[in-house]
Length: 173
Image (cartoon, rainbow, N blue to C red; front, side, top):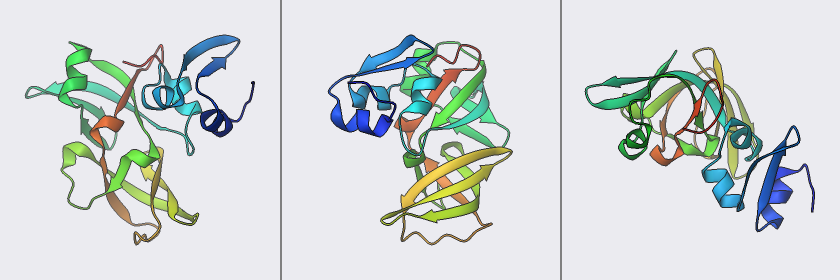
């Protein structure tokens, strides 16, 4: 069955083959593709709203690896950092909107401070369109969370929701 509707594919399929430019990008179960995308294209294609992408540099400080961007510095989980070895330099940090949780007291190294520009109420959840430095970031959260436009809120990044992509090849690291 062929479809361009990623939600239809994820709900109907036991296996999905994601193609781009006539080439297979990744194949597997919907869960594997969603949680472990092979590259930035697959990560951005699957999921609604799509994954957020932020430019960052990998830097090591005091034995901890960080993704350091214009307005953030997120610690890379130790297990993930171990697989990267001595990798440093330019990356793309990927975070799904559902992997950001409102948490006013989250530590700096696990959180993004986001300025709320738009709040879209869609029933049980709201979708926030925010700014992080010069980048746009989308957040999904429960609708009962009080939100004021223009307010800067802190969102904790779930450690398992941190995705890193090579900035040049766009392959998952």
